[in-house]
Length: 262
Image 1 (cartoon, helix red, strand yellow):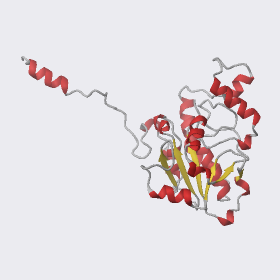
Image 2: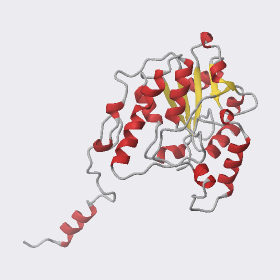
Image 3: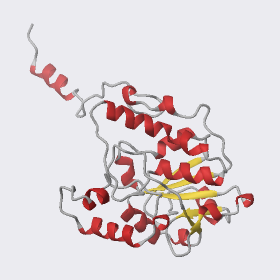
C-alpha cells in the first residue's frame, strides 16, 4: 500500500505537541490514582464555624504537592476559599474578598509587633475568618507589603506549632509548617476542637507514607543540616537572612502560614 505525501503530512500535523497523560486521575484531587490521598480525607467533610481565607501567590500553582487543596476538600464547601494574586484585593477578585477584608471578624496570621497569640482571642466573639498567605516567606512579605488592606486587619500568631509532618520536604527552618498544617492548627484553636488538626492532616500523612514506601527519604530542615554541618551547598543570602530571622525571633512570632521552598 502506497501512502501519499499529503496523507503522511496530515498524519504528522495531527500529532499533539504535548504527550498524552496516560495515567488515570482521581476526579476529586486531580492526582494520579496511584498517589491519590482522598481516602484519608474526613468523611463527610468537616463542619466548622470559622472560615479559612487563603491568599495564594501564583507560583504555588506550579507546585505538584500543594496542601491547600487538601484543606479545601477536608472542610465543608465554602469553609476554605482561595484567592490568587500578588496583591489583595485586585480587580480580578470578587467583591466577596473585599467584604471579608473589611469585616471586623477577620484575622490575619502574620508575624509583627502587633500580633497577638491566636490562643488569646475571645472565641465567644466568633466565628472568625482567618487569612493565611500561601507562598514562600519572601513571597508572603511581598504580598503583605503591596496589600494595604491586610495592614488594617487584626494580626495573630500561633504559639504552639511543633515540627512539620511534611517529612518528605526540606523546610528552611525548624517550626515551618505547610499551609494545611497551619490552617488545621488554627482551626483546632478557634473551634476549641484539638482533634481537628489530626483529622485534617491525615491526607498529608498518607501522601508522605506512599512516598516513603516508594523510595523517598525523610528530610531534616536546612537549619538542622547547617547546625550539624551536613548541608551540602553554600548558604545563599536569602536563606542566610531567613536563618538569622529564625534565630533572632521567638518561634511563636515567626510566620507559619506559608509552604516554604523545598
